[in-house]
Image (tube, rainbow, N blue to C red; front, side, top):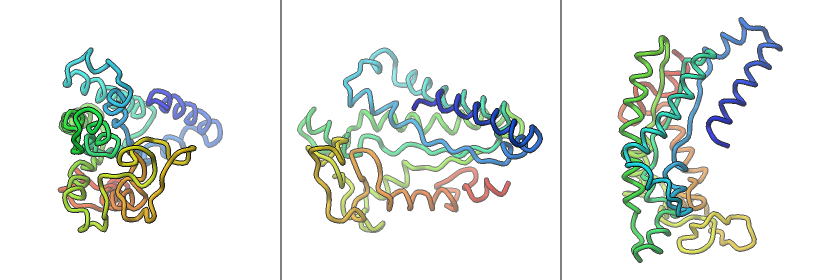
Length: 237
């Protein structure tokens, strides 16, 4: 479901709430709610997975600007309806999930991270805080939290055992090289013995254990990893 469709669904929900609760109560509800965004990975990964030519039509910076623009447009639309608090996340180094590593095996024979995709994550992660800072200056009462998933993920990839993981390159469930193909639960797939040892459940999605660690950092992490406020502070503001 793309972001515009999600926005449309949200607008429909707001209308239903107004009919049910009344305009005043809904206004209070929407202004105190926190709107969470976990988005962007597919915009950069899917063109590589599907051999799409879309990235050839733009420079890297133009493409990133378009993705960020889509996100900020939706935030502005939610703001118009009454939303004031937004929680977002930077992207992981997208060249390092199993699906990207498997593509690198096919393309070059190497099993390292796919730097071309990681570069797009870095550009996205630099552009997102700037865009949100600008939005905050334009939209009165708007506030936000950004979790640095890139830094948190890189720390785990570089020293997995410190965070309780044994495997950060291979997926727990899937097929093909590094069990990276998104076939978990389909006719042909392999499943690991102990999912808690793995950072990635399938070719792209982290395991419950990995997501729990990230959620904890998002909630009450230090300013080095979640800025300008963690979610706990954002909820209280």
